[in-house]
Length: 212
Image (cartoon, rainbow, N blue to C red; front, side, top):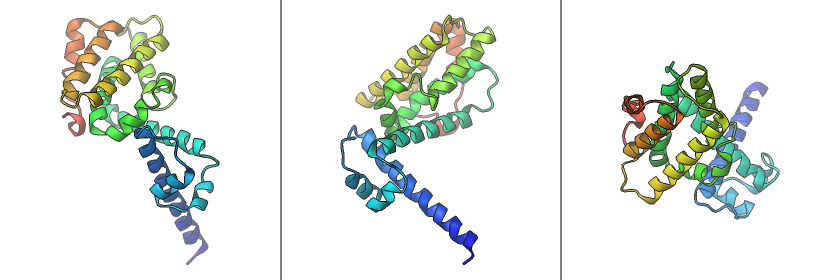
């Protein structure tokens, strides 16, 4: 085995270990149980105690990384699903509608986000920077009439978090219909007419997340 191959295998092994620790931490966060010893985290990840300290200095550092990883995965998915949209108002609407559906389709990721909800509005990862970007672009293009995009983002984040909690608490509700209705209300708040808000929220979504 060449040295280069050995290094590559070692890097892959470390990446798998880190990913396993992140998944384990995300499962505990989703369950609302972060007060667990490191040993329990490593057992859930099926890695040795020593492996933990090869990646993280503390349990708190692992939890921060786990939330950041969840937000990054969420943001990457939104980027992929909205990449071809030129209208920032449509991009905003579609991102929110997708996010509402993902509460039901990816419940563990949703729980991670909900259990860290206070940071959602100002985070530089996940939905927040993308929503702020789309709001600001829509204002610049004359599509939205918003005095303070940052305050608008607070409203948007609150609506998304409350919608997610409602969908978890009321599994009988139609997630797609609920997400679209809230998105319509937000578009009206941001300055679109009733008709245009309804039309944008009635457009087809990517097939992978088009159902409840």
